[in-house]
Each structure stands twice: as structure tokens, then as C-alpha cells.
Length: 440
Image 1 (tube, rainbow, N blue to C red):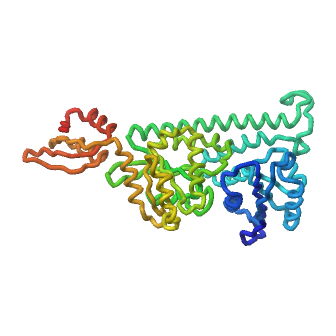
Image 2 (image 1 turned 135 degrees about the vertical axis):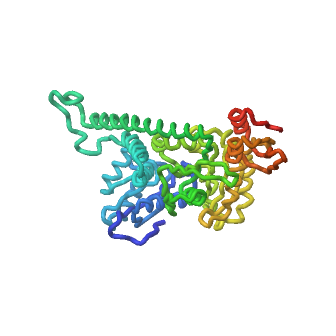
Image 3 (image 1 turned 90 degrees about the vertical axis):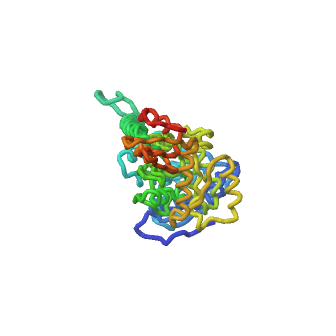
């Protein structure tokens, strides 16, 4: 099924998107849905998709992945355009990529290379650029095949690294790995800096809430709505790449840090998961996870499974997912109401909290905040504290850290506070103010 999706621009790089549908494989979702996502990925880096098509085959063809007739078919389409970029939305081996380029006389990239290209375009911070470069280097390492003539040259003579007779491909591989080592060393410095920042938040007793979810689920829009931040928020895959942290205050007076993180996607390249470990560490170390869902997505449940899979890959256990996660069903204003029962059964029956909202319209935000408050206070209890006129510091601490339910002052000026504290804060209060009387 060939389809024209966009107005064609002479200035933009033209692209042809091919979604293989391999009968022997089980795709994460229907082929046409995967095709639409691949088109969205192309749009995210301003490609002009001039043709998009699903091609069915029984099994991958070893030399070119696609059958010979299908390669000829793509070539005939490509002839109508000026050297378009060919995107195969699957994983190609280096040999398959090279053979396709030789036969089509066009640049060919697979799904992993496309996602890496997007991440490269989105990285704005030094850490983000390092992580993308590391992922690209790890990917490129497997691509060092004899695709170019300079890889066939021999090195000779004394004084050259590697000695006489070493092939250029071996030097390229060594240079690449040297760069990988340097990038990993720089990223360790980034990890140390972020670890120190997390330690500071721990010392200040500030819980961190990390937003996770499938790309384009609306995490950044929700983040902006909850914090008033100006994080880039577009209807675009991977609009946000670099993590953003903002401190905000809950209605109870408790201070929290919200962390907006990179979106996940099906078949996320393993190189990216490995390279972005330092960024995803913010997710691993967070006190609470807000799993933001695109409530209007036709593949809502499949996307949720993809996110859960990545969370497991970075070391978050199912036990923790059941204990520390809140499901936020975003885009409630356009979601299919008939799915309500299935959504409630899937996401609200395993002990997790489920709330719905529209971050764009800022409706339902109070429910999101209440869910955060409830989870932070799940092991809390109301204590009764007697405070004299000289206990101003303790009084301020309780108002800042706890949720004061009521208070009363007797004739002697002793104020009795009924305040909700979790067990950790109660222990901290007793340690910091041992002279203050806790009545119950």
C-alpha cells in the first residue's frame, strides 16, 4: 500500500519508508501502525516522506533482507525522486545494508540508525551529546565492514601504529574503540555529578518523582503543567531528550523534585539503553514513577508493555513497579471512553493508582497531585505534638515536612499540632528535636 503522507518540499531530504511484515516474526503491533510510527520518526527530523509502504515476506532474505522483486520495486519508486533516503523499519545487518545501497544506489538506514539520528538532533546538553555519540559509536562498531574502498588499503612502513600490513579497517576499529573509552570516562564524571545532586536531594529529604512513558505520551506537557517550566512540548516523537529537573511544592507544603525523562519506544536500540544509563539513573533512583500514557493511542496497551520492558531492562523490579508507580492516563479529553473499563482493569487492579487527566487542558491535575501525595504518605500516621513558645524551629519543620491536620493553643501558650508524617520523617523529627513532646 503506497501512500503519500506530506506535502513534498524541494528543500527537505526526501525519504521512502518501508515496513517489512515478516510472517515468521511477531511484530510488537500491526504493520500499518508500525509504518505510521516510522513515518512519525522521519517527521521528527524533518524528512519529506514521499512514499511509505508495507511489504510482506515469509522470512528475511539473507543478502538484502527483502526479496529481489521487492528491492526492484523500491528501486523503481526511488528512480522517480532525487536520491531519496530509504528507511527500512527493521534491524538490518551491515551486509544487508551495504547490499541494499549497492542495488538501490541510495542511502539506506534501518530503525536503529533512524532513532540514533533523531537522538543526535535532539541532544542539547554536553551529557546528552556524549550519550548519543556513545550509542552511535557502539552501533557503528558493528558496521565496520568493507563497504568503502579505503578500508581495503594496507598500512606499511615503520612508525605507523599497528605496524606494517595492518588493514585500515583494523585501525578504524581501534580509533573508534579509543573514542568509546574516552566518552565512557567523561560519562562517568557526569554520573558522579548526578549522584552528588541526588545525595543533596536525599540529605534535604526531598523526594524525586520521575515521569516515564512512551514517546509523545505528553510527559513534557504534564511536566510543564505541574511545575510551570518551559520544557519543549510538541506533538512529535522524541521532542524531549535531555532530562529536566524542577523543584515544586505540593498543596500540603511538601517540596518535591519532578524529573522529565526521555520517552521510550518499541524496539528501543540496546545501544541507546546502554548509553543512556546515566540519564535513566534518575528513573532508577526516583521515589515515585509517574507512568504517563497516551490515553488516545490506538495501541495504548502495547505501548505500556514497551515502557514496562525498558524499565525492567534498566533494573526496576516488578515489586517496585507495583509499589512505587502511578499510572497517569493523559489526553483524557480525546480518549475512547469505551476503553474505560479495560483501562481500569489493566492499570488499576494491580495495586497501582490510576488517574486520568488532560495535561494540555490542565484538567485532572489535582487528581495527579493527590495521587502523589497519597503515595508519599502511604506509610504515614497522624501524631500529636505539644509545642511551647520556644519551639519555633520544630513548628516550622512540621509545617514544611508534614501535613498539619489541625492545631489548638491552651492558656499557657502550648500549641498542640495534629500532623500527618510518614515513618521516615517521624524518625527524623524525633532525632532533630528530641526535647519536643510527642503525645501520641
